[in-house]
Image (cartoon, rainbow, N blue to C red):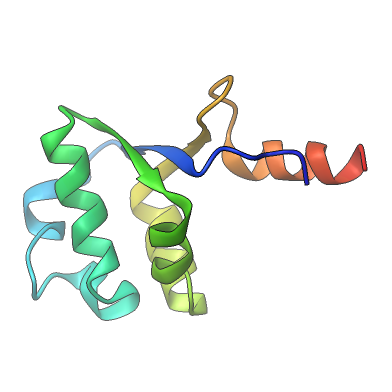
Length: 96
């Protein structure tokens, strides 16, 4: 895989309440553990966008419900070029 950057650009989807998601007892904390609220707080601190470490994304998406919660609430983009993360991963995999 060619993506070597260790961060992903994350923004909230339209209509997502970041203040609610950033709470310790939020709906995303059930699916993602503490990683979900942490991502929401990083987006708030970043003024609507955050560079989130891949390791935190991995922890948040450890379960199927975590994957669903992340993709329901956030848009993940490659930090180089801004393409959607899944698209970038597929393109890199196909070029191997």
